[in-house]
Picture 1 (spheres, rainbow, N blue to C red):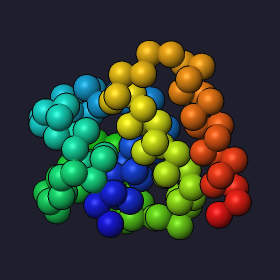
Picture 2 (spheres, helix red, strand yellow):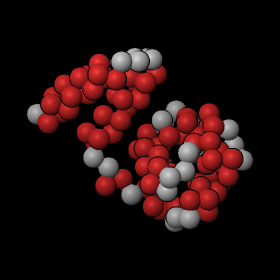
Picture 3 (cartoon, rainbow, N blue to C red):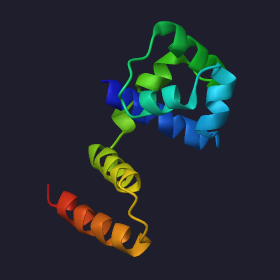
Picture 4 (cartoon, rainbow, N blue to C red):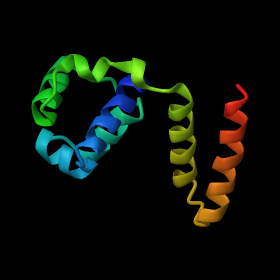
Length: 108
């Protein structure tokens, strides 16, 4: 559930065109904490949920609306994130990997 909540938070943050740095500043927490929440590496407290809802101008329950998350989209997002962390500089190589995986996921 942490990963779904983190994925949902990331989608909401991006839809509001807020960077991780900006959100961290508004929340008075570190960018690393925001990143860890978004990747599901860190659990989120009720206090942080309340603050997020105020900062993002949403209701807390909106962070838990997972039914709109396509599991395949989540998988692709994680794969792309992993590619970024592996420092693959060649965008064509990244796109080829993502294209192959997208084709594979369509068959699942």
